[in-house]
Length: 344
Ligand code: AQP
Image 1 (cartoon, rainbow, N blue to C red):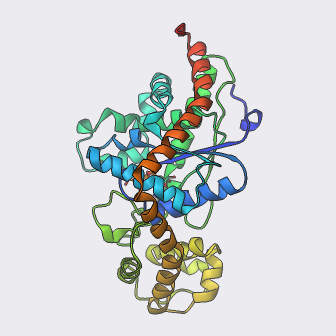
Image 2: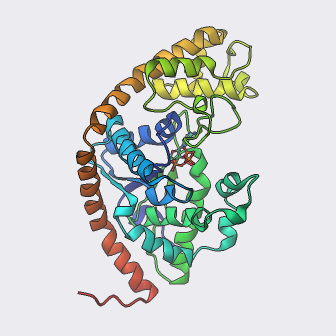
Image 3: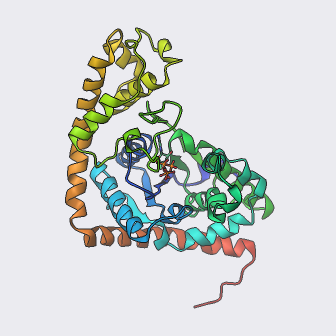
């Protein structure tokens, strides 16, 4: 059976799809935490998962631009490409190669049960979706296990995919009678592990939501951020005096959690400060805080994006370093599976 992650050197891997501009949800649920992990001194590998992005149609020019923009977002938010490895997935061929092996380990039924697959095909003809979208979690497992990553910081929505990654590692280890792949731990922490849409408290904030008003983009300027929070859907009640009072109020709860995550405080502390106050007071305070935190990131992104060649150089350098870690793990995987590797 698989061993716990303890025999493996602690290593963080995570990724974000360059399927649109980065949102406040990506920032609070993932990117801000990626920076914290890097600053804790753990080995960190971060990937712009462009192979995942094309599981739904992407205009090639936009995909290239979004990948560079996301890289700029990572660096502007505090990822240091010297301390962390930062690259785009398609530059390291091992992701797709290991994903194929995992496609032969994972079962169709496992994929069909994924809520993200169900959500993304809801109300549509699933038969017309790409095979890649169905197999998405298998590629995600490959992303993580290609580096023997032990911990993966993600938002709440990715929890089920992480469980599937663990299942794939365990089944591979079991089928081939090895203790080769770690059983990776998800790291889902912080006050905003699931940031909701500003227009609908039952839907997560998403970069591919057709409504731009539903999300804060990392590139939004101060006026746009203030306006989006002002127009965010809420109920007419003031904020409650205790956290319990947010239970049936998803939109209010979302804004409190966003405030807490941006201010690095607990939701309880936010309620202690704003309980009894109306949204007329709370929304402008939230907008000011968001602008204070996000405007420097947007400014730095703009500066970085003015030099796309430098971004490409950083991604290329990261890909080389990622490949150096991945290559022996992939080689060993091929050996375990019984494939001849005799090229010089
Ligand atoms: N709303 C969110 N709240 C908290 N965390 C979130 N994440 C995404 N949305 C939220 C986290 O961001 C990381 C990268 O996600 P992704 O880009 O790989 O895919 P996603 O989860 O499908 O994100 P989007 O924005 O909804 O993308 P699209 O619209 O293209 O599908 C993950 O760690 C995720 O948990």
